[in-house]
Amino acid sequence: MDKILVSIYVLSIDENYDVLLPINLKMMEALDLIQNIIVELSNNNYEKHDNAMLINGDSLAINNENVVRLSGLTNGCKVILV
Image (cartoon, rainbow, N blue to C red):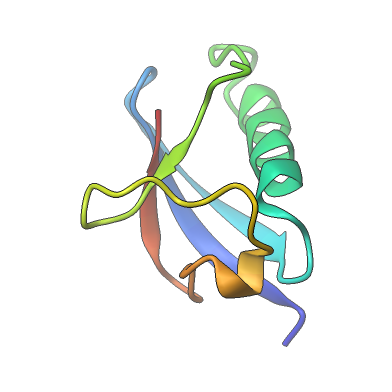
């Protein structure tokens, strides 16, 4: 499997989105991809932020230096975009 499906809750607009992420993408690039997708899917209700981060279920920030497959994200996991 070369992509994982991640459910993302966007705190600022109180919406959920499912996004497919390539597992070999760096998290910093994945975060940019996620924000671009959410801008489009939300009809521009979401505004991109340079300091945005993903938070996992344990309220821990996901390290942007890892690639997706080493970040702790798994298929079907739920995270929060802040």
